[in-house]
Image (cartoon, rainbow, N blue to C red):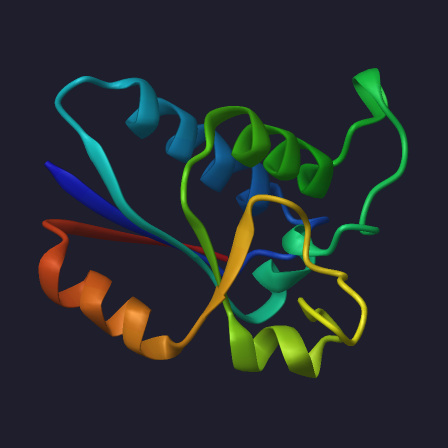
Length: 123
């Protein structure tokens, strides 16, 4: 079964970690596939490379998301418009987008809503 996850939850919201735990469970399940993982609205802050400080038990949601994305190579798309409005860019103007994340348009999310068998929104 294919799932699309829309993460709107801010980094300090419990929904951000619920979304991460759901993504991990889907990724690990042999009969499920993450069709698309899309960050939008306040969920954009999870993708800012300087959003977190600390380690171990002090790791926050942004750090945990970024570490998991980098470790697994799961495709993580970030709404380009929402990212730019929040100061997150990639490329020549100084990269603030965390490693492993890519900028995408809302057309990618529309594709997910059409083609995924299940859509789950967090936040």
